[in-house]
Image 1: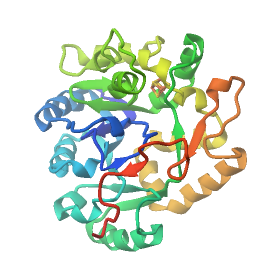
Image 2: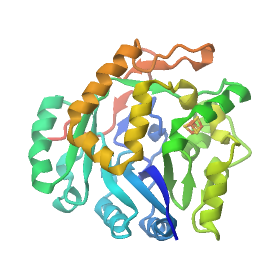
Image 3: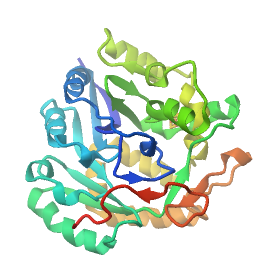
Length: 324
Ligand code: SF4
């Protein structure tokens, strides 16, 4: 049976984090301790690998390096040929704790460098570069100065539907967590966000109603129905991501890169391509994330990671230095 090709899967192995960023798109600042149980992960991979092939899997969080047996997850997925490229996306604070087994299990290490880290990007690079050479992975360090706020409780159903229809998340990716397949990462924590931040309790648990259960019968048929459905997710009513997306040449280039596993590998290996892409992107957007649209609600609220008076709890709860 021919497997369905999906460009990208995000797999949050833990939902909690050692940073406490108020605008985290995954709401990790609201989660204290939540792990994707390894036994459930194995059951999910057994089903998924029979029907689906991913171009790229990103093991992420929360902070994925808080997962003490992360290499087992990666090796299990790799043994089942679930994807072409295996990547870890980390904030880098626990880099020194990465074991040789973990370092040798990956193809790509992407580090989000936040301003809180004591080391500069260059210092981080000089630490990672020899490891990359020794263990045979490629790395990319992304300097993060901003979070785009994508949480909302104030868009109309019409705007939410428009966002869903434009959202590239669902055209090139998905999120897998704890027995469920989702079109994006939002259903996982939207209930939590609404309840904890706005005191809104929804009738449905979006973890169940916005995704499909992997282990139920006829996964392949249900996946087709789910992916072809034009009905928006309930989570889209609380998300600005689709509405904020542009359809520029750069965005299409990025989508293309994600659609081909081998391009993703090159994309990281030759990071000048990515830097070039970012430069072009800057030319067409006057500020990262600040896209001008017709509706006021659609304007991205872009905030500096630190130093914005409007941010609360924008503090570290972990170790600020990866070398200590
Ligand atoms: S919830 Fe957000 S990220 Fe997910 S499909 Fe809807 S608009 Fe896209």
